[in-house]
Length: 86
Image (tube, rainbow, N blue to C red; front, side, top):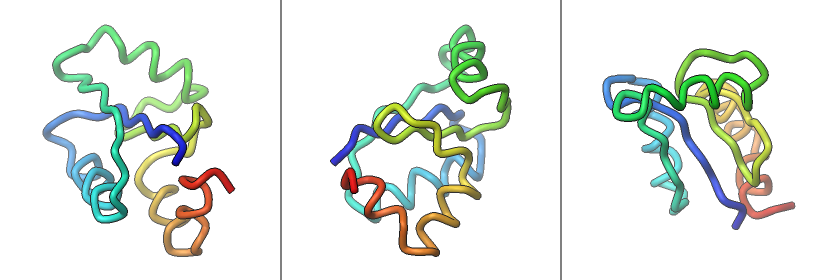
């Protein structure tokens, strides 16, 4: 399984939904808590090509987008293949 990185905050409902979806799929992921490490927000924005909202998700180092994009990938049946590396 490809490594997954989530930039988020503890108070964000979409971040909670992203965590829940990843957990339901059994995905172990790294999370950058921007509330605890606000200095890393600039890193997120740069890596996410200007996206400032949270969550921002990366699979295998590739930017996936926010929760809406991840949910759409899951709904269309493409998220599992992306996570697996296919």
